[in-house]
Image (cartoon, rainbow, N blue to C red):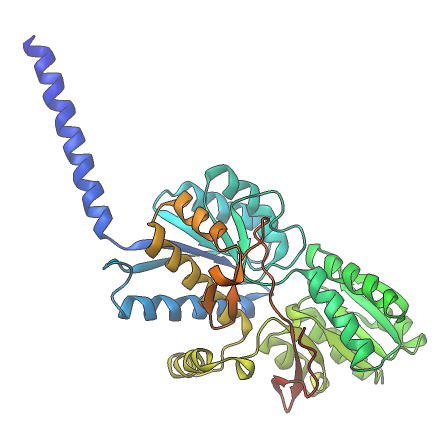
Length: 381
């Protein structure tokens, strides 16, 4: 009997310790993970994602945090590679102190992480992945950006209806993002009566595109649509101009990065790029964030910084209203299912459909004097 009493006392002591730790944890920082390409050939995107997340964190913490608790960001570098993304996702999902994940950026990385986050029951909210399949098949994956089918269709209509161009060549990155965007563009282009004179694929991290460009040049297209990310797009643009090709260069949001202009230099002038957000098209709150960002980082933010700023805000709002519980966060995001229930961020009102996708407008940016500015002709739908 005395032995049994000792066991009960020991057990009660352990419970007390655990409860004590729980109370201490309830007053500690709320940990949110951010996954993205912080090194590698997409690091320029990752840098903006990191800064956008940090600025929102600092803004929330300076205002007293969430019910008195501060936000702590935990960063995971997926290098823009699906294999690395799986490793990062496994690390974050298995760490029960992390209540949600902002990321990933690359569509292939979000797709790689999706089954892991679903298995462990933690939200994956992407501010950058646009492949049509990113959210489908998991109630734990969301994004606060449009899908490639919308973006590709938008760009095709813009080319025909606003630019009045009729013959387009397509040069695409042979990955989930490049292929999905290319397919959507071509399908809508054909409906618009645009002739796709030729298509060609390239592999990420390629540096010599001269043979493919020589073939494209022979077709004398009105425009060249580069369906890929900024680094390869910049090299393609530079080498195309070096070959004397004068057609209109088109890109999608994967090209929207200061790195594109840095690598392509003067060859980038006049490039037209679809983007999910432009600060000069934003409202008063966006202008305030623009000011704070420039003061803190001594540079202009891009759309990825803005979308990540909002993504952190969406998760923080969910925690404030539903608590720092993984499932409660997921359920709150799922409840944002109509315009009147949307999260009012600087990039617009964000709400989700049954798949976790969201509908947002597209803008067109132009490279002028080495900077991204709003194209003089827009097509807001």
